[in-house]
Length: 256
Image (cartoon, rainbow, N blue to C red):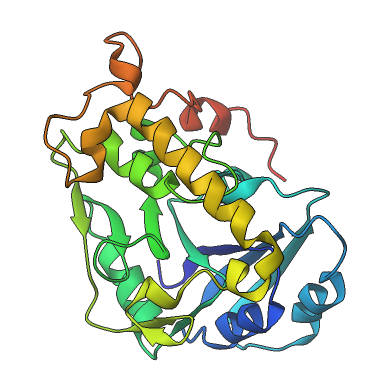
């Protein structure tokens, strides 16, 4: 495989960062997909403008304007389900920018058979590659963690007791917001729209309480104790309790 099958992102506002992301692509990508989570018709023209901007490394651009914000997990799941037959997906925040060679290194790293996930830096989830067999085993992202935050921590808890191989950091760099390999300046979504910042932060706290119930407070790392091995400490509850069976759905794919 000499190209990335899917590079997907979601956006709520601040389309400047999306255009920056798109123009930083310097390795062949078959499908660049954007889910517009704005839900208010505010950035439709700016997002659609991607169709008119030529990046020679991108074979096809797909834009989907959602009628409402389905959240981070919801958008990530849509990227996976829309391109369900692909062997892996690269999912990125819209305010990321790749340095030269970064995407090629991520693509090469995910080709190793035993590797399930490749992270850009520090095990972060602002840019990552995800194998199909990981989704098959651990499920999709939990859409209860709406509109965002903690979906990455929840996913990590599903394989914390397994020996699943991940690449935690690449040698090539990227920018999240204005900082290199550092997501402390990330989430330009709430920084660009202060009127929704309080609501997002309130939801974040609610999401953390949800994870307390789902995995025990020890999921935070700095809290003593052991995390649950199954969601909500229910032995018969499957770790992928979102129950999306990728292989079963693939067998029914209509070919378009």
